Image (tube, rainbow, N blue to C red; front, side):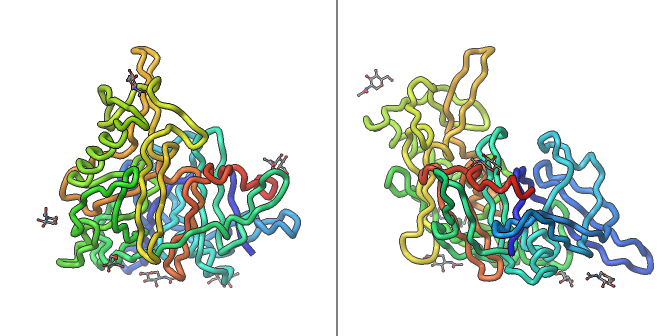
Amino acid sequence: MSIAIAPFVFTSASVELLAPTAQNPICGAYPENLVVRDYDFDATLIDTLALPSADVSTKTHLISLPNYTFSCAHSSLLKGLPKDVTGLVSLSRYNLSLPNQISSALSVPNTFAVCFPGSFKSTGVAFFGSTGPYYALFENSKIDLSKSLIYTPLIVNPDGIGDTVISYSDDPPSYEYFVNLTSVRINGQNVPINVSLLNIDHENFLGIGGTKFSSNTPYSLLERSIYKAFTKLFIKEASLSRFNLTRTSPVKPFSVCYAARLVKVTSIGPDVPTVDLELGGKKGVVWRIVGANSIVRVKNKKNNLDLWCLGFVDNGVNKKTSIVIGAKQLEENLMQFDIESNKLGFTSLLTSHSLKCSNFNVTDFA
Ligand SMILES: *[C@@H]1O[C@H](CO)[C@@H](O)[C@H](O)[C@H]1NC(C)=O
Ligand SMILES: *[C@@H]1O[C@H](CO)[C@@H](O)[C@H](O)[C@H]1NC(C)=O
Ligand SMILES: *[C@@H]1O[C@H](CO)[C@@H](O)[C@H](O)[C@H]1NC(C)=O
Ligand SMILES: *[C@@H]1O[C@H](CO)[C@@H](O)[C@H](O)[C@H]1NC(C)=O
Ligand SMILES: *[C@@H]1O[C@H](CO)[C@@H](O)[C@H](O)[C@H]1NC(C)=O
Ligand SMILES: *[C@@H]1O[C@H](CO)[C@@H](O)[C@H](O)[C@H]1NC(C)=O
């Protein structure tokens, strides 16, 4: 059995529950909006959550999760989120996240898969409680994309402080998903990176360094020295005759932009140097980022601005995590977070397989 939600607009949040005490007999929670880094204190409630089944072999039906733990939140906590969003769901490792509550209520695998659409006009999908199959429709046939996943281990950062807006005194491990990024290549060339930034440093229980995913961060964030080396190499490779790109004045938050008229656009986005993230596990586990996921269109009719900008942002120095892989880089990829086996499966850009998240045609189950 598996559960699918589509169309899918994604945000992530963490919720920390407070146990009732003699002084404070109400069960409360601190729901967080990590996009604007704000939080609220509100009541928790237990109710039934009903979600559509994604089992293609059965008729549409809802699966009920009785005794599901929710947190109330004031509507002001929705600021910074797209309009029409009415709530936040946590997909984290926390035991009250949606995948964890589904897994324990239904005794199904603690796994979820998500595919974020590349635009508001398109749809995405999320599957819970199943390691597959994940069917997409392609030219009137059904293909199982769980068979196309490439796997890398997920790493638990032992130190969660700083990942949530509120810091909790019991010092839990991080509820976020880290991977062991070992090197970055641009157009096949190695970006020189200080290796100590790529490892998680457990000294002083701060968990500094490493690479994590964050769907609530619009563009990947790179520690300053990594950002400098990364953009320097990108500019060099893009200037080669194969791309023949010369920079123009950038627009914040970006620092590398090209006039749109210079950039050739293909079915996998702007034709620019590829970015390869080499990940832990078997040798050769590579997350390839092509133009559709690396380059952002910046347009402003008023001043005739039309640019393609490198969608990575300088995160300064002394931030907890060296590399935060953001939403732009995750679009139109199928990602499976297997919390039980601590591994991440990914497809890289689905368009390279002539597919999109909207090919997971599960709207008829909703
Ligand atoms: C929900 O929780 C109540 C109170 O703990 C319990 O009596 C009930 O059996 C639970 N229902 C289900 C379906 O687990
Ligand atoms: C969830 O985790 C908290 C803290 O890690 C723990 O105290 C609590 O018992 C867990 N709840 C369940 C339902 O496993
Ligand atoms: C990450 O990969 C490096 C290089 O292969 C290895 O030395 C290190 O132990 C790995 N770290 C983890 C946490 O797996
Ligand atoms: C590498 O980074 C570590 C941690 O930030 C720092 O202590 C060290 O000096 C850096 N090494 C080089 C060669 O820059
Ligand atoms: C490279 O681009 C410049 C304009 O930016 C153009 O003048 C030149 O002809 C191009 N060279 C090649 C080899 O396409
Ligand atoms: C998705 O399913 C709906 C309902 O079954 C159907 O009308 C629609 O054409 C399908 N879309 C695609 C892309 O196959």
